[in-house]
Length: 272
Image 1 (cartoon, rainbow, N blue to C red):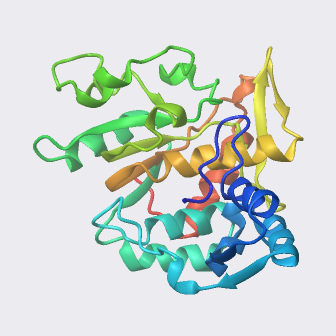
Image 2 (cartoon, rainbow, N blue to C red):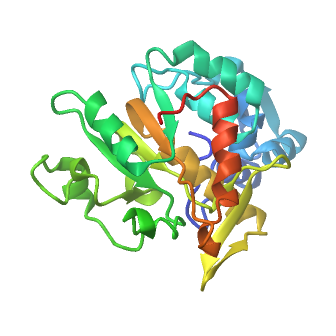
C-alpha cells in the first residue's frame, strides 16, 4: 500500500486498513513496516492505537523501499517525499544521486518547457503536461483544468491527434493520471500550493480570489495531488512555475517566486 496517494474526499489510506484490523480482528497478530510512521502515510495514531490493543510486530523487511515506476530513478519517490516534507538537505542529496540518470529541471516559461520535452523524447516516448485540479489561474498559459479530457485519447493516441498528450494542449490532472505514467512530464505549478518558511500554504480559488485552505484533510489532499503529479514520469520531468503578473491580483508573482527559489535551493537546475 503506497503512502500519500489520497486525493479524493473520503480516502483515508493505510490508516483505515489498520483501524479495520483493530476493530474487527483483535485476535490477529499484525506485522507492520516501521516506515509506516513516516509522515506521508499519516498513520501514526492508528498504529499506536492498534499496538495498545493488539499484538503488533514491526518488521523493516516488509517495506518496499525501491520504486519500480521509473527504471532510471529508483529514488524518485524518496526525493519527492523529502521535497514535499521540506527537508532541504536530504532532498538535495537524493537529487544529486540520480540527476544524471533522471533529469529534473525548472523553468518559468511554458514554451521552454514544451521545447525541453520535445527535445528529450525519443521515438514513441510519450510526454504531456500535468497540473493540479485546483490550478485555476493557469488560463493565461492556455491551460484550463475545467476543460475535460478523454484519458483514452490523451494517453493512447498518436502525435497527429490534437487530443493526445503529445500536442501539449490538453492537460491531465492528478485524478486522470493517478496510477498511470508518461515517459516525460511537465508538472505545471499554480498558486494553490505555495512554499513559505513556515511550510506549505494551500489555497483554493473561489469567485475572484484565492482562499486559504484551513482543513487539515484538504491540505493533505492538495499536497498528495502534487505528489502524484511529481511521480508520473518514467525518465525525467520539467517543473514549470509561472512568473505571474503584477497587474493580476490572482497571479501575483509572490504566489510563485518563493516556490521557484525553493526548488532552485535544493539543486534543481533552471532552464532560461
